[in-house]
Image (cartoon, rainbow, N blue to C red; front, side, top):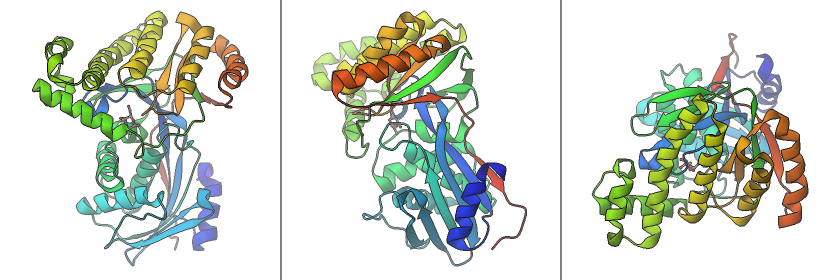
Length: 387
Ligand code: GAF
């Protein structure tokens, strides 16, 4: 378990024996296709080199004892037979939620668990989905449950929707479970069919965090989803996936202006996401550049989920890369990060421009991450009898 040495030592410190399983699940960056997943549309994420690590060991008393190393060893201790929401330790609700949903389908016993991670929180890079998938994958490996990646993603999404209270779609959990090194994944959120697209090695995925924190549950995320559902219902379709731009314009009178614009974003974003697949396939970065710019404009003007510092970051990067690469906000919005596909030779110029200009224009200091596309969740299982 070379990768996980430190994690194993920490587990032994807390539980006085070696872990049975250690798991890592990545966060994600979404290249394009924002707020389309819960509208049954298309998304284009990649798993990234930031993630959550979980080490677990069996216990036979139906107790879950979960230690958050990044919260000074805070411990959440609860019975599997009475899993409730914990106001005092919000991080633990992701653990509680996924185990509650998992236990509806699968039999398993108690778990000792330690958790640590390096996905920036509140940055739109899916720290919570990576925690959910790491816990699910670790417990499934521990108890040899035949849990597929798609099933884990659906359980994570249900835990968020029903236990945590965020009406998120399937994207974040699915890419954390099914990411492939060097690739982004084009996902049809209706059929859950997906295909991998290699990221051109001449381009670098650069993520810049505006360092304005976002909160999905507290933000207007759920309102956006309600507005999309309202638009679909007014158009007489099951979801916006089934609506065309012509139908939307024909039905414009029947809806408020914000609801119309939310739907216009989603319908146009689905087209852009499919077009992005074709453009990347053909390495046509002039088109990639246009699609990402148009996606950002649509999020800013129609979906109204960007904020000024994020728009500023996009403008700064765009001034450097022009049509040679693409840049847009990524994730749920209201703060967080931008993602850029940058020709490798321009990366130093982007780093320089961002570090000089962002603070000068906004008074805020950014964080910049050079990213690689990574494999989805994986586990290492000890062959020894441990506790
Ligand atoms: C968040 C949600 F969790 C995703 O399901 C998705 O809707 C995304 O925002 C916006 O594209 O990350």
